[in-house]
Length: 251
Image (cartoon, rainbow, N blue to C red; front, side, top):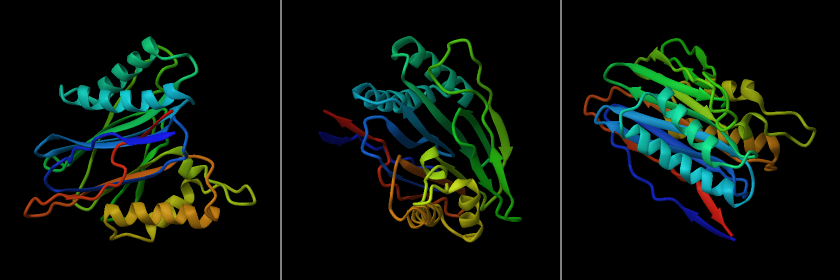
């Protein structure tokens, strides 16, 4: 089996720091994530999971990421992008293939985060001033089940230092030797222990926390992304993302 990495484009956006990391599970389907610059002052972030095995699962990871980039390039709203991705899957995928996705637009100049969540794990928004953690709940169902569903989106004000964290179900559902799950609660504890962490530090801390909890055992892919509004006066953006696009495995 040959492993290929899709080409990665750096997203240069002022006043935003971001990082993503993925521990794939070695199957053709699975997790993906991406960052893209929607304008000089707006960052797009996507994370998702394709549920399905075989070559089609690998193909759909690539299709969804290409779809996100293509639709986002037309300045579509997150809810519209998700709806188009759902239509694309419904019309061309096999019935046993479906996907979840969390898609966000972060505008540090307007101090606004807008997102759509199609059946994905609830993302978390960590407030810098209070340490409060807000759950960004689902705004629609999974992709590929029906062409008649609708998807909503939500906009939330953000401030300097606020951090968005999104992850796949392989993180919360990671189990130790006794069958206990890692859960969102433990992820929140790690975030609470790192109030001044950069996105890179926070993502690393979460994945290392999962590995320590499970003793290194993995039954599914584990992917985490983080985006932070920095408000840096020089407008510098920091980029450190490993596995920036999903691994695509082909036979």
